[in-house]
Picture 1 (cartoon, rainbow, N blue to C red):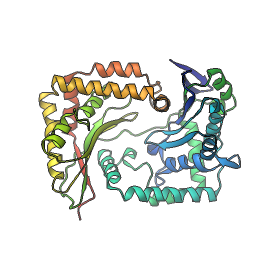
Picture 2: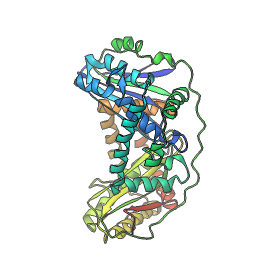
Picture 3: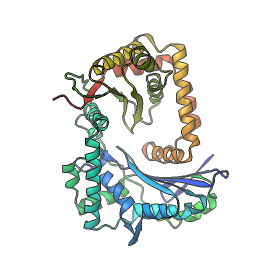
Picture 4: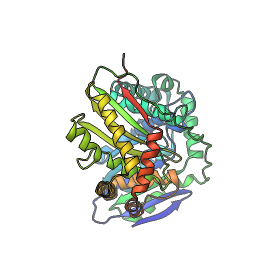
Length: 404
């Protein structure tokens, strides 16, 4: 059972599991790639790196402190959220919570520290650019959200990251804390009273002002895109379209459709791509939901001669589901897989903490596994048909590497 309380205007979600000897923490900030200043794309991602790696109170950085205590800590930046998450022994959670909060709130920074971590980020970008399975996703989102910040790579590019100044990132930090919701989740064996006492020392209570939501432009209409030229090398194909936002009940049908056309040997796509035609070894489908929109996608790798046939097979199956429906057995299997996925996420303490905190800053409601499961089990064939029909009408298809 998740207990909800507040520190100032910061919602805190506590799930006490006495059987666990660890506690998982997630501190979420509703600030991500779509909120970067124009011309300085990658600011939120670089900010994430600095939260983890810059000296804290003139001493060791957050990442080093937690790891020296035997725990694990990391962070991730998405289009709309920045998550700082850790898993530590239950008795170490109060101290870790204080470190995480100070790393986010007390943003003292030098030019040398900024330049050093900028170089690390540039290496990360270079590694991603060298991997077509990464670049195909950037190309897909750029086509799906053309001209909108959701279509820009969260990490930015070398030019935009190079343009981030010390004053710029300090200003972004101040703006993020003033305009973005913050939420904290803790799941594990730490006594809730100990966590409540620790919260008084975190500084989160200083965030007393109600965040003023920043205006966000809605994504424009989808422009369907097809592949007109195929590369002569091993090819990564991505196809998909818009999905509903995180608070939209229609998202559950898109989730079920992702399982229906997923990597499981029980899926319709597996039966065609692996069993019948042997067109691909590595493929999967999934949906991601943001506050006002989402992205449904299928990713597959194939040899050059197989890639066009693979895309044709995917489109045929999607059109078939849109026209004829998924079939009772296939639908029941996909629903059950989606339910099991939700159960597994809820029973993994770190995943649960991250889901609780991230959804709370996106849609102002905590993630509730029981509600999700009930909604998934209520998905009908007609709802899946509607999802498949909408994807077919606005299908975006891209490949990487690009043909010469």
